[in-house]
Length: 423
View 1 (tube, rainbow, N blue to C red):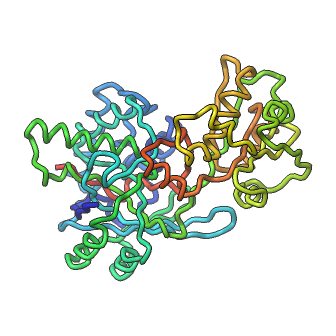
View 2 (cartoon, one colour):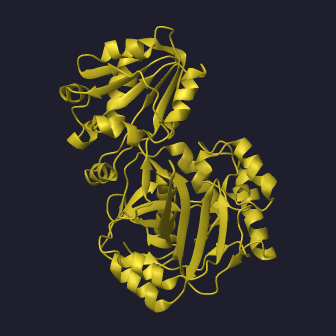
């Protein structure tokens, strides 16, 4: 990948806890209001002008967002670095009782067609892209970074970042995650990092719509003759994480299904799944906050089906079942737990139970999934293991797209730590 330093905008002062936010696409109006109650200068006021951001909103919403950003830049709410820089970024957090520190680097990455230097693993949809494009056109700024991972087996970038960091420029806490950022403007260090990553592709972990939007934004400007290939708009804001980083967690996305007929129980579902699946009732009540830790003892592909009263362990034992329903997909895709769950369980085994109110919600915490069905807030839940990072790479390299909500990279990259101008 071709990376470039940039003169980023960020909040001044040392503590940005009240002004940073989670990514726009996991927020609703209540979340936005709560963030703005912390500070009227919270980045969500610009990054989420229209709720929900699943389609294009009214023109005036984006114009207001752009004016607010301009006011912040002129009044000193945001300040700009004097020299082009890369930005070291660390997130410290706890998951399932264990503490992690994930290190990343904010950089501009030259946009290329998907599948070249930048490799996707998900489909994108027109509505969210229209929303992001309008915001980009109005603000001429990339507000929320793409989360990408790359292969760095000898730790070149980590060593360089370690040598370049001392006290963070800014820091804060967001949803229990400690966020820190350092400015790296030493030309020699930047040059070494650029050389180390020159022939390394980046895989999109999160932010497919944001990447596609910024890529298309620059492409349209180039084709109209408004910019050349060296223009800042050609470089997309990424948070780059080494694949080997021990803090790069991929959590499961358990499914919680409601709007099912009364006949839908865990035991009845198991009857429908046999004999392609082996099924066994579980009588104990394990801690499912870290479902991987519990399910891994039963082997790859092991899942739990939960209803209000029971828990059943299931596992596909007849791979021909997936070949029959998804003959055009690659073997790696058919072996995915999320693909098996979607194709054989949700789309087929549950089909005759679905009502007009059928819905599926997602959570990375198995205990939450269990509590939801125990409380009668949903009918069934399926708790699964997380998708391995290697599987994400295989699917991406094969040019295939993973099923919806296949991965949950935790924690999310905070918005507002650094903003990248596109002109």
